[in-house]
Each structure stands twice: as structure tokens, then as C-alpha cells.
Amino acid sequence: MRIPCVDAGLISPLVQLLNSKDQEVLLQTGRALGNICYDSHEGRSAVDQAGGAQIVIDHLRSLCSKTDPANEKLLTVFCGMLMNYSNENDSLQAQLINMGVIPTLVKLLGIHCQNAALTEMCLVAFGNLAELESSKEQFASTNIAEELVKLFKKQIDHDKREMVFEVLAPLAENDAIKLQLVEAGLVECLLEIVQQKVDSDKEEDIAELKTASDLMVLLLLGDESMQKLFEGGKGNVFQRVLSWIPSNNHQLQLAGALAIANFARNDGNCIHMVDNGIVEKLMDLLDRHVEDGNVTVQHAALSALRNLAIPVINKAKMLSAGVTEAVLKFLKSEMPPVQFKLLGTLRMLIDAQAEAAEQLGKNVKLVERLVEWCEAKDHAGVMGESNRLLSALIRHSKSKDVIKTIVQSGGIKHLVTMATSEHVIMQNEALVALALIAALELGTAEKDLEGAKLVQILHTLLADERSAPEIKYNSMVLICALMGSVASALLKELEAWNPWAGGSIFLDVAGMALSALPTVVFSVLCCCTDECPSNLCFACIP
Image 1 (cartoon, rainbow, N blue to C red):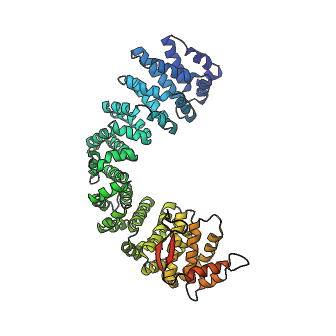
Image 2 (cartoon, rainbow, N blue to C red):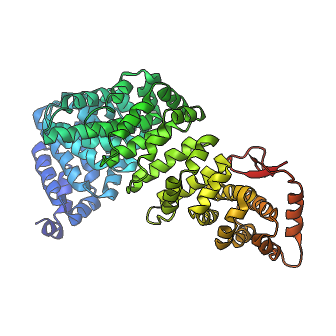
Image 3 (cartoon, helix red, strand yellow):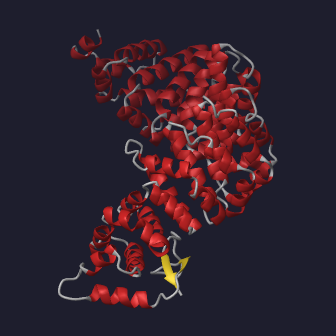
């Protein structure tokens, strides 16, 4: 019957009735319009064109402070009408936001929090609007966090708490609201729910435990909210989260590891946590999930270890603690998310750690797995991280044995291909690794370099106007290293190649560079500025 009502032209007269002073007329008109809008594009469009939404919002503002039962009933109907009007319709939700409905609804929630029907309708309306990114700024300018936390604390019934959760989750994606929720005491409520539900085997309790712990992790994604809860590593919340890691509950293990990963977003926090035994807790957790373990827990624990390994001072400590051995246990994993984090963790650990890089680089099983993953075209992240770790093993170890292992495992072609990556940082890493190969072990790698068409790729990089200065520089350094070989097939290929027609500028420049390199020592140097922001430029210096 909705479309016939629209076709009969009833919407405009009904909207005019919204200007009535009679409360009963307003009540029945609001119900009628709400029913016509329900799941009806035609109904919503007609109400929109007649200007019905603005009139209803004006009524909500003017009646907001009146707490008599009849008025609260009317407010509930009007909220329901707006919910049906905008449900799952981004453009109409945006319209309501622009009309300023959010501050009015928040005010309604605060004044009428004792009225269950009106409160529920406000929550549903919030749920409709909170998904829209444009709503977050308006919500952040109100006291929505305080009102929702107060309401949450009063709820005993699972279904009512679930309604509040459904509003909190999208709002907590905004960093400003994250901090407001933390300051309003939401975290304490969540921790209490976890404590109450952790031993229950009821389906609804398990679901609520998951929702509460997931929301807790989400709150830690904000820098300010995270740091406030960390409290120098001595805060009650941080300590409670730590207790989740040794739990027998997989959901709490997951949430605990993810929380640690979120706390580990600055050097100070990372250093404190490593010094206070967090690494050992995470390794113990990983040990419990080696054989047929929970993939999400594996991924989360590896994420935390990767973040903790970023500060330079932590690397040696984590290597001494046996993190490398713990991580390598997951080398046989066939799950791309686990593979991705495993690779990232190892790459962080060996950064500027020559001994560790050499040890890993001579691990044939690891290198063979890396070469295999370098071809994982269905998983770009795994493929990229495999290439980067392969390069890192060479760059940080500067070891002939590592290069030989990589050559024997078929990794050279992937490093050459990596030099053509769309990402400058990966191109640089590849070129530095290739230059080290050319300088240290060209005889072993020459055939593979030739087969991978290295010279043609260098030609392309140097001829391409879009190549970054450091890419061209590192390409020239690699060419110089290649030209240092005697009777090399690659050298002959270089000599036959003149990238600038009509002259021998290339050979002159390369020869001058080569003559300045009687002794090869490898270091990090920038070709174009005093300090290289990417820390990836390579040079041979006497």
C-alpha cells in the first residue's frame, strides 16, 4: 500500500499536517509517514521532496526537554519515522546529518534515558547514522561518549547491551571519540564484562565476550587513547590485557596479542615491554599454536613481535630471547596472513644485525621457502615481503655464503625482478642487494643475472625519465660493480650497450666511477642529499 499512497498524492498533505498544534494529529501523522517510508524508495523520496524531515527535526528540538509520557511517545514516533526515512540510504542519512539531527538525538538520549522505548529508538537512529564517516565529527562535538557509557552501565539485559555495542563499534573508529570513550570509563565496563563472561559456555556470553574484547582492541588503535591506557606500562588496563595472553580462551589470547601489537606503536612502549618480559609471553603463546593452532592468534602474536622488533635497541634482546627460532616454527604455514607477518617479523629482526642475517641467510629451508613465496602472485603482500627479506639477508649480512645459498635456491631472478617494482623503496633494496652480489660473488651469480636480463633492466631504469635519482644512482653503482669483473659475459653485454646514441658517455662515466673504487667497502650513502630519508642508497667507497 505504500506506493499507492505516494501515487495518490497523500504525502504532501500528510507533511502539511506536521505543522498542526494538536499532539494526537502529530502522533498519527508521524506514524503514517514512518510506515510509508519503511523499505520504500518512493515513499522516502516523496517525503524528502515535501520537506518532511526538516519539520520532524524541528519538532524534536522544540519538544526535546519535555518529559511527560505523551510527549515522550511522540518523540519516539518521530525518531522512528526518521529511522525509516533514512535506513540504509546514505544520501538521506547525510541530509539528516547536515540538518543537525545528531546533537538533538544525543540530547534526547541524555534527558530521556529512563524511557526504554525512546532510548532504543535513539540507539537505532544512531546506528543508522554512525556508519557514515561524515557523522563522526558531529558525534565527536557532543557528549555522546558519556551518554552511551552511562547507558551501558545501566544495562543488565544482553540484548540491550548489544544495542549499545552496535552504536559504540562504528563510533569508536574515530580517534577523537576513542579518547572520549576511554575518558568516560568504557574500558572498565568492557574489562568487567570479560571477567564475568570468560568462563561461560553460553552462546550469548561467548558472543558478548568477543564483542567486548574486540571493542577494547579497537579503542587502542587511537594514539592518544592507547597512550592513556598504557600509563607507562603500569596502568591497570595494560596489566589486565597482559593477563589475557596466557589464558586458555582463544578469543582472549587473540585480543591480548592484538592489544600488545597496538600498544607497540612507539619506541618507548616497545622498549618497556621488551624489558618487562612481554616477548617471552608472546613466544609461549605461539608455542601453544604451532601444531594445528589458531591462525588468528598466530597472526596477532606475530604482529606484536614484529612491532616490538622495530626499535634498534630491542633487536639484539629479541634475538637473544630466541624469537627467530620461535618464528621459524611457522615456516610451514600455508596461511598467507601468517606468512606475511612471519616475513615482516624476520625482516625487522635482522635490520643491521649482521650475525642474525647471516645465520638466517644460510638457512636453506628458509631461503627455499622465500623463493617459493616470491612467486605467490595471488598474495601480493606475501610476495613483496618475501622479496624484501631476500634482499635484506644480503644487505645486512654482506656474506658470500648467504649469496651462494640464495643463488643455489634460485633467488637471483626475483631480486632482478624486484628492481622493476612500482615501489621505489623495493627497487632500492633490490639494487643494493644486487650490487653486493656483483661485488662479492659475481662468478657464482653471473649466469642467473644474465638469464634474468639484468643489463636490459638497468638500461630501462637509466633511460626512464620517471626513475627516481637514487634509482639511477644505484643502477650506476651496480653497473660499476659488474664492470669490475674480468672476462664476464655481463661485462661484454655492457660494453656492447651504448644507451646514448652517438657517444661513449656511459662508458666514460662508468670507467671514472670504477677507477675510484680500488677497494670495495659497502656502506649506506645518499647520492643526492646529505641525509637519505629512505636510508637505502648504496655506494662503494675506498
